[in-house]
Image (tube, rainbow, N blue to C red; front, side):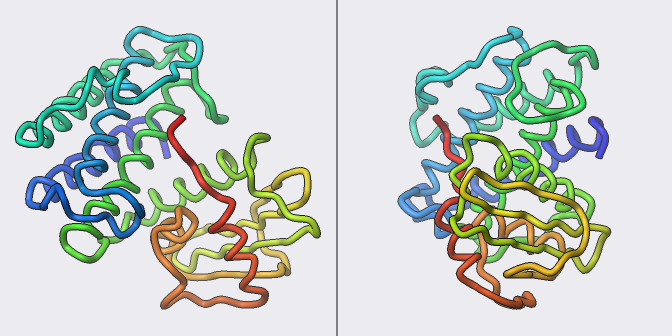
Length: 250
């Protein structure tokens, strides 16, 4: 996906997330994020959007890390929470839309440019938390556009799962094949004792899962189980993924 499409994804997913959250009970537990209430989810996305905007707008050329509440300037009262998150989303959108293609800022996953990285990261971060809001408030998750879900699968597999600090490791080695049935997407992850390597294409694997790209995207982000998907082979590979493939704010 190009940068403009990804920025449009940030807007679409953020608008949907906040529209749903505005109708929910902030005390409601988030079933897809154990230990969180809806309040925590809205705080998180409002903080993440402010963090990303600060990196882009300052601009930061080194990591901006620390307590998210501090970076966000503190959490507002519950009565102001959704409007506060919306203000953060609006400012992030303005910053992304006005950013130069030659923007030079810190980023932490492979991408064609820093702007491409931040547009992509915020698009998929916001999209996955939109799913969390929908699971909490309306009890189901609306599917993502196919191309968007395929790009999200590329990001988590080639970005998070494959980076040196990933805890996704196995001894003995295991292989995991994903096949999107509604788009041109197949991946094989080789999970070994030194880390994970990913390649596009079809190959025999210890465990294979096929289904719509949106469902696979939710699966690899641990937002759904395999109900309705085709699963072949050793399902302990899925257990390994669920246990080890975690992405946390630090």
